[in-house]
Image 1 (cartoon, one colour):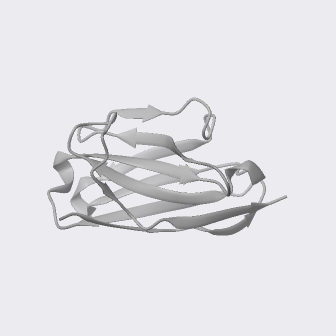
Image 2 (cartoon, rainbow, N blue to C red):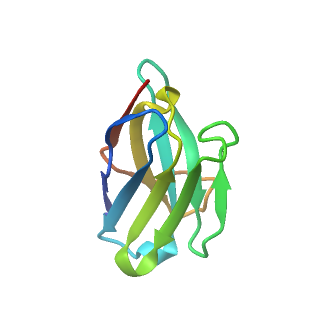
Length: 120
């Protein structure tokens, strides 16, 4: 069983930056792809970015729009999402997920989420 714990969310003003972290335990971190998703109030959860075990990355073309960067540190069992120039539209609960299949999923494990709120 893989456990994922996100952190780094908070309340910031538009234009600020945040770095989300997700620490994995209970599995072989380097063997699976990691992803970030977000769910805005009243909307469905959507894909933001993913990174495979070699460091290959995939981004949703709309979420983040070039402002977000995903990275991983296999030695620390951690995946990051660097978010720059945040906008109120980025307000959401951000979830990390792990997939044994790759960056396209399916996603086998999920974290509990971390809230990001961006004020205008």
